[in-house]
Length: 290
Image 1 (tube, rainbow, N blue to C red):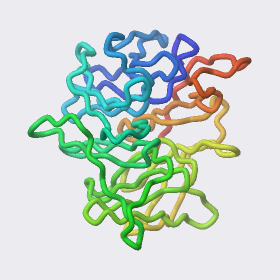
Image 2: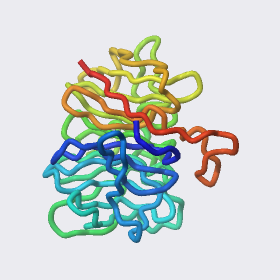
Image 3: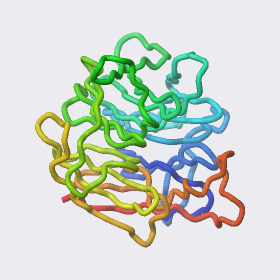
């Protein structure tokens, strides 16, 4: 539990150098390091104006934290874990539309990010020339028509990035990078793949944090060989007493550390807690995955 209330924490990551947890705030913006007793210390520099902080992922070398940010400057930025300085900023295409970089995953030298407002998935090459614009990953329906994803959120891969699994408001979508073919993953009997927020790969399965009306749980999903159908869905945790719209987290070994009470569902259109909703101290739960 963090020591201060009112941050509206949506995301979490882990600094591999010292094992400390990092959380992203929607209400205050920026990235905060969680110290002993839940004490908070800001990592980024306020002058960099990160704003709403969503999905986060530490680079493979453990030196940088990639962060998806919303208003006022939608982007994906890299922060130095040593001093919090912005070392790179990637922006969505300048197409005149609304953008909300939401969640991301690193695969080798490639970064994939969902844009919930644009209905798109982007990719950026992190090696070679440093381009500053995210490139769309084409998505097409079975007839070959360009497809706009319905509020893409969590994203993960089980095959090194050849196929991406993307959580959308209509369910889990399998997106082939080579062909752009996109199709909904068929749920297992008596299970739902809707309302997934955080999505992670672990042990050949997908781990999903689900939230929504009547649904507050973490599940482990086994897919068929082609990744097109869920063949087994196991509930790992459901309706924990701390749950108040659980969202995202970070896999540490065989444990998922995730945000239990983001309070995201209690925000108004301006991103503030609605009148009469008491601010909570963020709770991060550690859930064994085996």
